[in-house]
Structures are given as C-alpha cells and as structure tokens.
Image 1 (cartoon, rainbow, N blue to C red):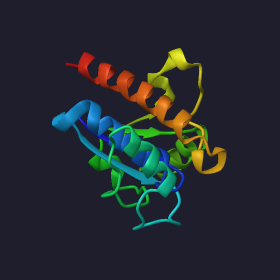
Image 2 (image 1 turned 180 degrees about the horizontal axis):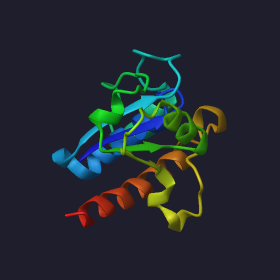
Image 3 (image 1 turned 180 degrees about the vertical axis):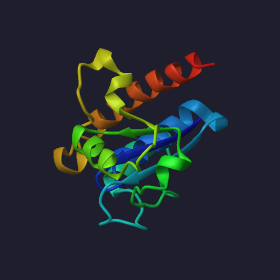
Image 4 (image 1 turned 120 degrees about the vertical axis):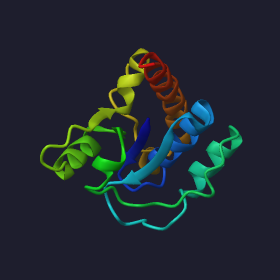
Length: 148
C-alpha cells in the first residue's frame, strides 16, 4: 500500500504523520508526505515539531517539504488529509477518472471525537497533535491490516 499524508505546508502534521506511521507500520508500506501549499518546499519539518516527535523517538530530520500534485494520484493508493481544507484542496487536484482513495486522517481515530488534526504551527500544541496523529496512525494500520 502506498500512502501519502497531506497538510497545508508539509512542515508539521503531515511529516509527523509520515514519521509516526513509518515507525508503527515499518517497511510494509510506501509512505510519504506533502503540503497543499508550496511555501516550504525543500525545507525540513518545523523545529518544534521535530523536537516533540524526537522526544517520542520519531526522527523527522531527514524529511523535506514538497507540494502535492496531480501525479500523486497515480503514485499513491491512499491520500490522507489532516483537515477538511486539505481534503478540498486535494480533491481540486484530482485528475479526471482518478479513483484514488482520499480520506481524512481522523476517520481512523473516531474514538478521539476529533474531526481534524489541528495545526500545531498555529495552536502551538505539538504534543496534542502528536497524540492524535499516533491514535490515527494506529487506526490506519489496523484498517490496512484488515484489508489483508
């Protein structure tokens, strides 16, 4: 399974989701992340997110931001947005005839009662974002294992 995590700038939520899911799922899946905006292309994840993830044993230092594009619909089986705005932006890029599954990350963590992963770049709650990302990553792993 090829999974792409998408947020706005690809410096907080989606690289954290990539790192967390990679740690939970191992090498079973091809995993990447991207942003809907191109402001940070080529830059590493935001320092405070790297520090918070690093404290949990997740190294994000090797990741670099990139912008999601139409070709990602061919490259990935599942594209996961962090919030409704990301989903809308992803859907605007969808090529005609593409059947790539696009889902909201929190769909995989209904027990949290959260409808989206709040952006810690603005909320400054890196720990809360990581807690939610870890819960959704566990749910995603279980869902993909259920596909057999």
